[in-house]
Length: 340
Image (cartoon, rainbow, N blue to C red; front, side, top):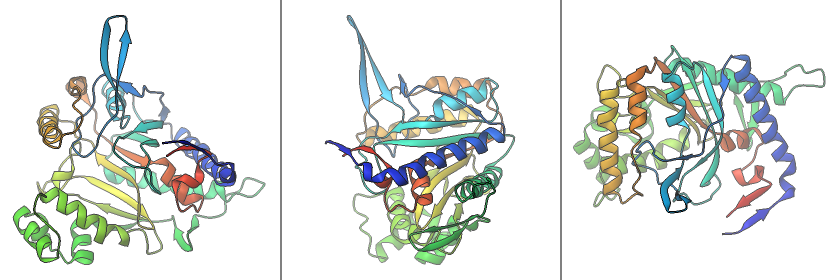
């Protein structure tokens, strides 16, 4: 790896800074509390799908493992459990084994905000309002008057005035030809994937689901003139989300522009017993996958016992969001210094 300096990116970098300022301004006006959080922790939430960075704290003969946080969630939910209400974090997060590309970096900026007394649909409304606010800020004239909720990204005009909404089940049927009864039946789904030409040997339901989602669903999202909100994911993809009454789907959405995933939202699970069970399941999956072992954050469970209020939160890949507003093809185009 090496350090890359690219001052040719200055114009797009300034747009990134403007997006950052306008997002913070929007959340402040909505009475969210901005919080500063650690990026190192002695324990983490177990998440089977990601890898982490580990390091050592050393003092004389003392030695203790620390981990770079892959998200601020473990800290923000503590604050919510202890009475802090609507709040947000905008800062660095880290995920290992994620090579640098047009959309990925192992060190990245994450915006994560939580709103109390609401569910994922309440966050969807707040998020859409935020996107429109940023667009109007960036297009404001010298008097400060906002102009437009419409942006152009790589030649596509996108109105930020409303969502295109589609359920995961409808998206799989529409774009991949997989019916709802097949989507939620693991054996039937694997058989369908095999018929479609996907290799199933060595892969389970979740692996095949992700392959089909990435190749056949994602390219169709956010390409019809509006950002797409795709919602109600199978419960297998909801480690920290409440389930819907159907018992099959979770209260989770992701949102897309031009086929690019920008963020992920849950109605947060508040049942500490259920969360503890899911943590155990995720930790087992991590070990089977050979992921870096880390201490499970039992303090997170204790915080839930203390009482997490009903709330919903969203995590947004901030460089990706700024990339869209800067009309950049890659997150690398909005950076002055990069490591690759």
